Amino acid sequence: MKPVSLKVAVPNALLFIRDARIAEVPDVDYGDGSSVWSIPTCVVITCLIDSEGETDITVGNTSEVKPSNKLLFDGTLETPSRKLILEIVPDEKILEVSVPFATNRIRIWTDGHHRLAEKVVIGIG
Image (cartoon, rainbow, N blue to C red; front, top):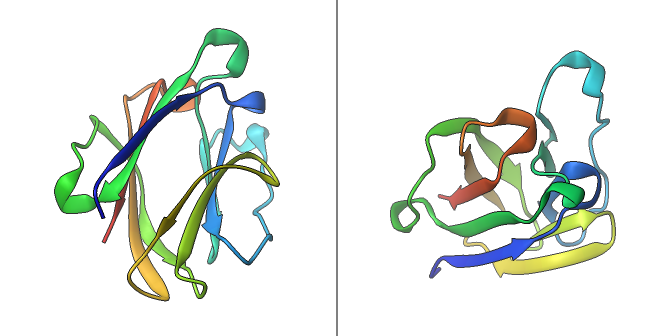
């Protein structure tokens, strides 16, 4: 997969990364001090809130993307549809990419600004 980059204003500063057919998302609890929440089919991360500007998002094979300086998430994501989507609010898709397997390793890097990340890099594989 060739890397894809886009800039987008993210309402509520939440980016959803999930299987295209499974709409279940993790509970987000800002009070726990985290900036990432996950379930087997979805990862939610915080990024720059839309009123502060756009977030630069890159998605591609891990071997072809240039990671930012802070590894935020390293795990697997179940993608039985073999389609991964990015949403800025539930049901508002900004990108859909094909993935090679029904379960894929996903790594997410940010520019190091946990809750206000201006740059997010998502590596698949």
